Amino acid sequence: MSIPPAAEPSQYRVTFFFGPEPVEHQPDQLRCVFNVKKRSWKGGVQVGVDIAQEYVEEARRALGFSSWLEHHLRTSSPEEQEDAMRRADELFVQSVCTCALTLALHAGIEQHNQVIPAAGFADELRQIITEQPGQVTDLIRSELDLGQNSDS
Image (tube, rainbow, N blue to C red):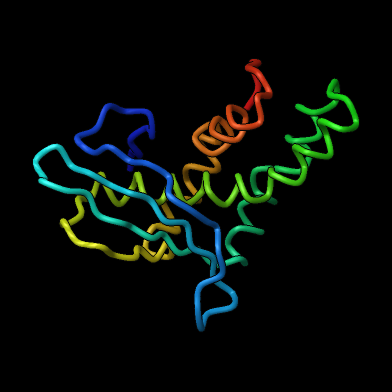
């Protein structure tokens, strides 16, 4: 199965709203919320993306996120490294949720506020992390202003 790239032009305009935050009554889940507007809709909707903390840890290990981050911060000052490390965990969850939302948008969503369980896209997310890790790391690299280089 081919997974469409997150950067593909879309009929949706997506804006990150907030998160990750713990999901009420589900302490092992995190939620990121996005504002989503489709060109044909008169207004936008809020779409939450839930993800299990266990899956986040699995994704970090599969991506080698700690090593990746350390590699990109090696030339930064200690203060910059400390700031980046504080933000990196939050940005990682936001990035994985963004990937799950992109998958949901490609599948099509209706015009109403909703929550998408990332477990519904777990296999596709694993495939992205394995085959297209830049879809996760590019957002983090950009937000932390880590610059571009040839490795993911």
